[in-house]
Length: 312
Image 1: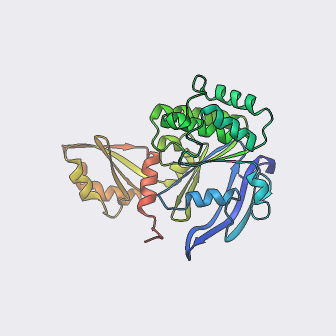
Image 2: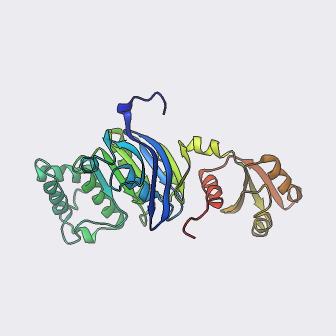
Image 3: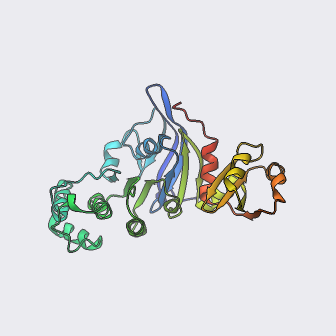
C-alpha cells in the first residue's frame, strides 16, 4: 500500500510474533488494513488466525513487533483501542432470557449510548428485527441470533469490528443477508476483520490473508492471491475419477488434486512438470481434460497441502 495516505490506514503492523507455552503461533507477521475495508483471514484450524486478529487490535500483546491500530500504538494504547472495537465471537454471547429489545437497550446503557431506547429501536429497524422486539434471544434461530449479535456489536458505533467465524452453522440465505449488512457498514466507514472457512465469504472481502500455522503465506485481493499462486489447473471429467486422483496425488509436478462435484481439479506450480506428470492420462478416451482458471479454493487447498503443522 505504498503511497496510501496514513489517515486511510486502520491497521499498520510489522513483525508481530506470539508464542504460547514455548510454541510460536504467529511468526513475523506484517500487514496493513485500509479504513472501511473488509479484510478476511483464512487458514486451517489452529493456524493463528484469531491470535493474529487479537494482536492487530491490541486485545493481545505480541511478544515481538510493533504497529498501530486506529492511530493508536498496539502496545501502549491497548485500552484506548478497545473502546473503539466491536468483537463478535462464534458463540452467541447475549442474554438468552432477555428479549431482543432488552438485550440491545442493555448494551446501549453499558456503553453509555445516548437515548438507549431510541438507539435500540433504530438498530432493530436497521437489522430487520421489527416484529421480533419482544422475542427472547434464546428462542431465535441461528440466523436471527447472529443478526442480533451484530446489532449489539455495532450499537456503540465502533470504528473496527472483529468477526470470528461469525456465520458458522447459519443457513446460506442468513449468511448472505449478514454479509450485505457488513458491506453496508463498511461503506459507512467501519473497518472489518473477519475469520472464515467459507470460500464464498472470502470472495466477498475486499482483501484476504491466508495464515497457516503462524505464517502469513499470501495476501491481497482475491484476484491478486489467485494470480500470485501461479497455479496451472486442469478440470478433469469422465470415468473413475477417484482412481485417477489416487494415482496422481503426490506425483512430482502435481501440487493439488481435489474432487469438485463430478469433476477433478488437478493443479501444479510448475507447468512443465505438471504436463509431464499428467501426460500418461491425457489421451485416455474416458477422460476429458480442460485447462481452467484456478479457483480460490484450489489455491487454499494447495497452500494447506504444503503448510507444516507446528503443533505436531
